[in-house]
Amino acid sequence: MQNTQPGVTASDKISPDVGDGTRETLKRAEDGQLASMHIGCPGCGRTYLLPLEEMAPSGPRPTELPEIFECDDCHLRVPLHARSLDAHQQLGECALCGTNEFFIQKDFNRRLGLFVVIISALVAFLVMVRYGHLYGFPVFLGVTLIDWWIYQRMRNVAVCYLCHTIYRGVPLNPDHKGFYLGSEERFKKPRQEWIKGLRE
Image: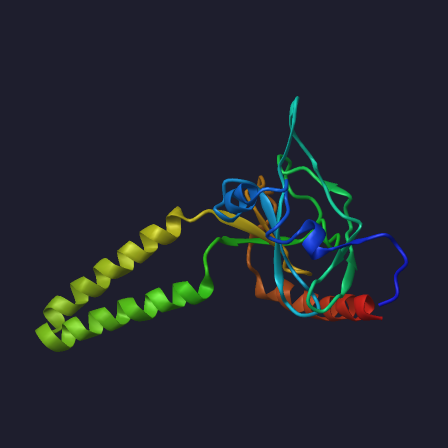
């Protein structure tokens, strides 16, 4: 992609070695103690973490964003839509692509969630085989309730429909609802065109 604008590589701004220059900031962002953006490279899918809270003498201030995001792996250059982002204001537009449509989901690892469901079902099945259905069903119900309780305690995050950037710890917009397959289908072609334009 040809682009003469000044930019920075992801390792300069958005890799685990940056933020305010300390690993503590990145750790706090990963643990959800700081608002953050999780950006997936449109070219190769590598993910990057960008903490969104900077401290000034007068208190928190908007985070200045780089003009260009460049992936360390595939070197795709992506001009950021926003020059700064205030982690204390509701999301209006995606800082990466400029889209104003997001969906809300629980902040959990899908693979881990699937693993937990499979293990829970397996434990209930083994109890049924060993001790009979009379004991198996209560175990299955109990495990299901525990899973539901854990799921409900997880925080919500906002995800951009176009670029799939994840926003953690920012005030959620009440206009943004849960994932809707119709919207995802509607964004498939624009996403392909957006990525194609970045590669040209």
